[in-house]
Length: 156
Image (cartoon, rainbow, N blue to C red; front, side, top):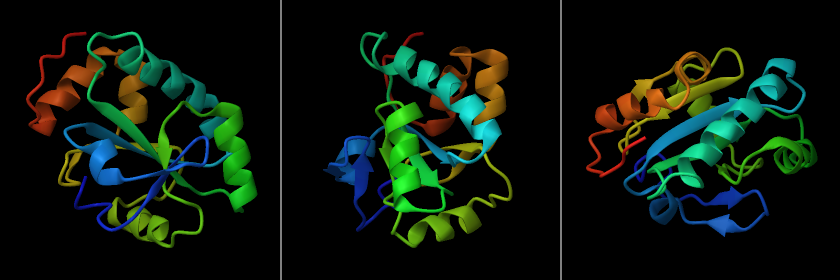
């Protein structure tokens, strides 16, 4: 992930700047391509919130997982409102960072919502994160972890 976000800052839901190298190190990362105006996104976001909460707040130790929201909202205000209203306590690429368009190209995003699960290198583990969470719940995380080549004593 250090490769994917090198030299960039991410933001938290509260607007604080976050160093991606520190925040994403040794974690499986879900790149969440979404927008507040998109009804299927508003339908899936609460499901992702529950998944995230269970992995990070209800597991001991917390699972090595982080979400980075890549917005398709129409404005920074729409993005901020969507994050405040519906998102978990995850990270986002700032609205005004043109890199979000590069990420959409890199990961071939043609429709939203899309949850692309990636390794530290940015290599795709699966581009079907949304379907896997809906179909398998927490059990899909173990498969992602195995695909990520991260050593962890995580048990779900």
